[in-house]
Image 1 (cartoon, rainbow, N blue to C red):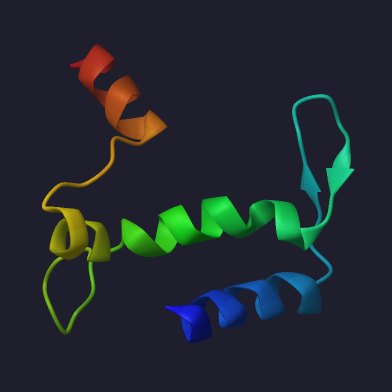
Image 2: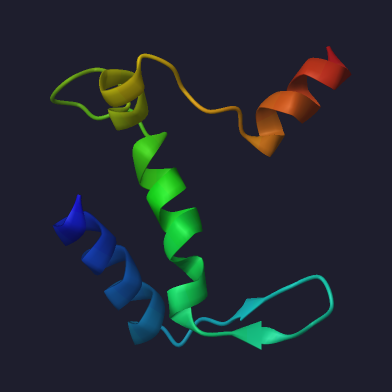
Length: 73
């Protein structure tokens, strides 16, 4: 996971992307680590057919999209 997270951060920095919150404040890449970690842990991996969260904890965390999708159904 560390190598993948490092690659995600490297790509973010290489393209000079900015992370702005709802108030328009720009943040450093280090503030994105929890979000990048969540993205990694909730992505299905081809080698296992499951997410790392499912393999580690036995359940997948609810994402904001999951809650929104449930409300729209």
